[in-house]
Image (cartoon, rainbow, N blue to C red; front, side, top):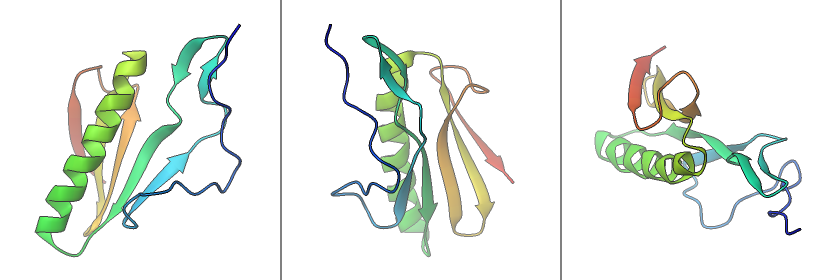
Length: 105
């Protein structure tokens, strides 16, 4: 039986990623017995200093998360403003699949 790719080791750096977007790799996610359990990339931290950069990076992060969300069909996307210039976009089981919600923390 074919299995999916193994989870990357802790501290693994992803190549060709915007240096202002920090993917969070959470252990225990990925493929198990041929079924998609949850995506490896479930949270993206965004740090910006301009509105233009914010719009571009949020759009990119949400698109990446949308592509991952369709693998499970169970998570929506939550975008949180943590403080000025610091945002987190993440898959969330608290947001219905197909929706994106924004919160200010």
